Image (cartoon, rainbow, N blue to C red; front, side):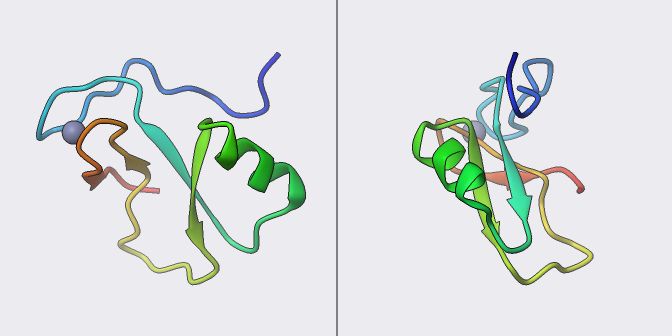
Length: 67
Ligand SMILES: [Zn+2]
């Protein structure tokens, strides 16, 4: 069982690489730091804005989608 969903059906609009990192916003817990260092998620920081992207491409780093 995984802590976070892996969005395998989602593809980067730039390079079409699927399974982007999910960007998690808000103050990160130790659990979230662990997930980031193991490559499961990306941390977006504490500042939450309306237009923050939801995903970060593993290949090209492009951020896209809506939270
Ligand atoms: Zn990409």
